[in-house]
Amino acid sequence: MSETGRKVIRAIVVFFGILLTGVVGYMYFENISMVDAFYMTVITISTVGYGDMVPVHTSGKLFTVFMVFCGVGYVMYMFSKIMETVVEGGLRELMGKRLMAKELARLKDHYIVCGYGRIGKVICSTLDENERRFVVIESDAEEYRNIADAGYTVIKGDASEDEILKQAGIDNAKGLIAVVSTDADNVFITLTARGLSRDINIMARSSGAQGSKRKLKRAGADCVISPYTIGGMRMAHSVIRPNVIDFLEATMAVDDYNLQIEELAVSETAHLQGKTLMDSNIRKSFDIIVIGIKRGSEKMLFNPKPDTVILGKDILIVLGKRQQIAELKKSICA
Image (cartoon, rainbow, N blue to C red; front, side, top):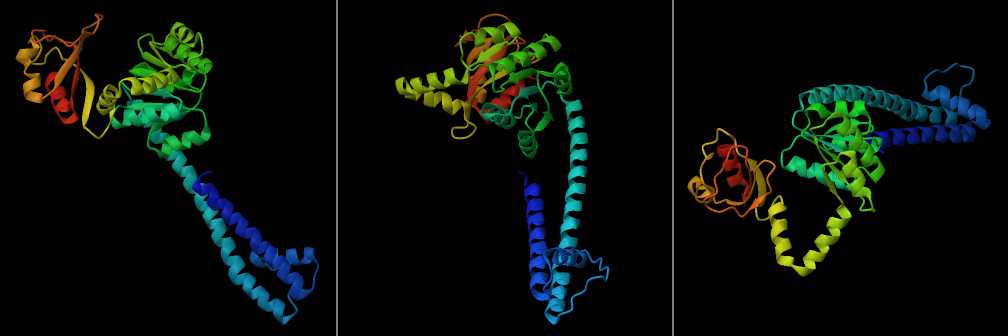
């Protein structure tokens, strides 16, 4: 429950506490029935005062003064806060929807993350840290609020529906990541997304169950990943070759060594285009190691030789510090 909801509940509980205090007080001081005591309490704190019932004992009159100062003041405060919450909530929701619509209209070359579970949270956090634009699709109302509170662009709905994916800008999206809870839902999302866009890159989560990867591939997923399989392999390799895993983790971490592996697309107009790795002086000028080159549909070229020529549209897989990688990116992507 949200903080606003808890405040409203607390206000209502205190209000009923005041009613109960009034009923018990009038029954005791005025020696009247529970119904009459309740009636007197209501007309007192609501300031109606029909005049048909008035306190006749001194103690009852003093108690009425207490109820007027405490009860009436609190009731007015409570209703003002409830109205303020309703009005502000409505305005906030309306403004939020308008801002979200404008943000969605501007999205291009972004990613669509379907599902905000444990894996979805990590994906969104990593995309945000790497300054990648993305939109989240989530059907759960509570998770929807959590996503909005985190400052992410979010759409509430079923990601397997055409209209929801269109609203998320699938026509202009760079990729879609389906990480909802079940394989069946991920298959439906993948089928829908592939039907709407033949070019979008689709990555889907698999539970690792037999046949799930094959079905997701048939549905149109470009890449299928099983977190359970990867997690098991990661734990096994940590035992077998811990230093290699430590190195890989250092390149994927946000802080610590400030080291990372990145892929950079070479522009056809870049000054490095047409030069060999040795002549490019990437290692000397940027202190960066080129560990691989992806060229079109060809296989990945690992550990390229110094005389390897850099071509336009090549994807360089580099290892280095983030600041140097950012500088190299400006140089080869210009």
